[in-house]
Length: 256
Ligand code: SF4
Image 1 (cartoon, rainbow, N blue to C red):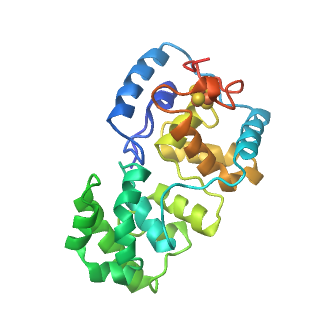
Image 2 (tube, rainbow, N blue to C red):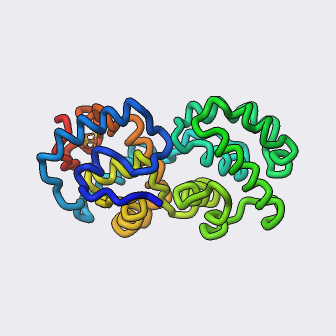
């Protein structure tokens, strides 16, 4: 379970405890210096409804059909890719999964491949031993309890080994079009910075976003926020001068 972070200012600079895709040493270093700078400054309250709507209106205008960057060929391979993405970048995961998914794109094929061969194929990723165990265990559960299909409920997904709420939300959003927001390190940081929803845990941020993001934007909010955090509102040196919402952002540490 994610630890609570007591200061929303720290949260804006840091990201959720437990990490997610894209968390790395450089980001940690950046978080440290940014946090020091911003700790002395008070965070404003969360944005009002008109500002939130304007933020997403601009995201939509700039990128009407946002897509995630993990490669997959079916619901099962997306689920595996998201499980593998903990503490790894999407680029690193994609490098490892191209050969893996060519060899095993269903739970039955993953079981036939076996844990040792799976480990060898994903050993470039951190925690590959534990991730391989989880992928084999979740493949067994999918075959045994779900007819080899990826279930469409959050509860069922979260019952699978290695699958938490963030992973379940990403799969349900990307594959089944549900208006759920998977809060990874980027969504957490961006939401606390602007600030949209302020929270000390990913769950608080997720529930806050679900309350304030206008319904028509909920379907794509997850991908807009991730892409904004990955390419513009980076943990270290956010690109504020080129940010399309820099006039709406009230983060005391913004660089404009
Ligand atoms: S102005 Fe800077 S800190 Fe604010 S959202 Fe844009 S990139 Fe992030």
